[in-house]
Image (cartoon, rainbow, N blue to C red):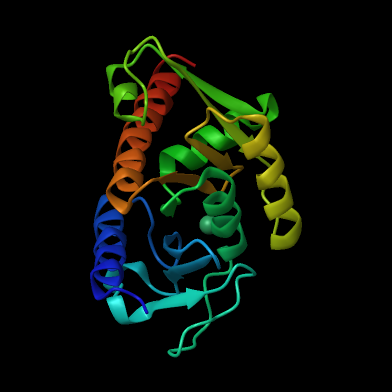
Length: 206
Ligand SMILES: [Zn+2]
């Protein structure tokens, strides 16, 4: 049974991200964990316009990304990635955006395999980070329309970088997570701020 509060929060987050320009059109997808054993998620449906995202458009799915609730419907195409993150990070919520800045940085730094961020006060908004001297590594994975193959790559990346709070898909967007929806939303806000600062800085001083 999905708590109405959870679906309302997911829809509200989606509308806030749309308003910030972080997930326009049908881009982006958002999920929260409903149970661990068995693993069940509630996630945005496939192909929804995020401007008017509503609680009734959230879909319950099982640990293989199949619709599992009474309501039915088609879960987001990227559901398998959410499942992999929920499983490997013990995350309670996973949020995925397609902002201009994350897309630019993922294109520019993709060949390096990731982006290193250090020296910014805003880093302290990431879970467990207490100083601006922290070095955040944001792995960048090649984009792929084969979600089974991409979710395996996500699993490997999460295991190789246990300290990372997020990753980027090349020329695609950001994935981050948190223990709660509020934690995950804060991570999006912190990272999108840092991405914009870095991308604007690089444009100014190439
Ligand atoms: Zn996406």
